[in-house]
Length: 330
Image (cartoon, rainbow, N blue to C red):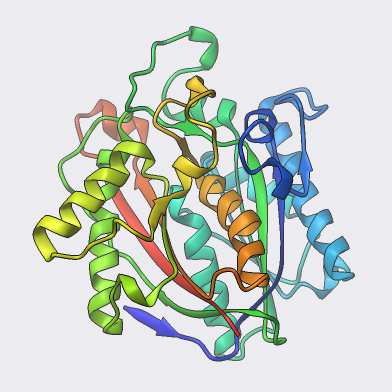
């Protein structure tokens, strides 16, 4: 299902990152960086809440608005009961919508916020995502203190928080359309190979987007997925070409690959992941390129793995989902 918008714009974005992202190739585009993973807090969970609050402070400072002027906060993260979003959003805005799309939450938040605004239910929406390497690894795999080996196919949960502020006030960048994804079961069950898990949903949503809009890759200056990593990226390109004869070789990349220096930051293995990973790429360098008209239209596809460790221990498959958002220069 694809939604089209005429009156939804990005007013601004904010990005807060941790030490690994600070050392990556996009560091100059981030609004605020930290050199350690605690951010002055006593636990990693509290640290994630802190950077959520930082992201709100930064976006309000940029826009010159107060917290009461935010109509709706739409927030998602990886902690149980999306607690980072909930605790970090207390007292902000006039309404809160908690979402869980795992790593697809950034695109899902924009899609939902755009629907609220386009249909006149609100004037603006602050779309928030966050993740923290230590909290996510502890919850979904093993605490990093265990020192469990990670295969080359594993991705690295990004640490950061990001807000995309949508409004019905005209700016230079608008949300042009969005395609809602569906849950895909491709019989994958390896939590250390998320590229293989999520590539099928990216394929499904990308093909659906092209079918429903009548577009092809040439209609976009850039197509970005998040967070397939280096292996999932190649699966997507190979499948789209061999099955649908859709060539993505000249204008496609993945946010999980772009966020880090894969040659020198060996600890990230196949690339970045987490709800904030794709947002940190999109809301920093890519948004900057759109504002400067270096890019005119970008298709952003955020992918997510929908699973619980409990279900995985019970030998269930890992499902995935992908949502697509088209951004263009006005």
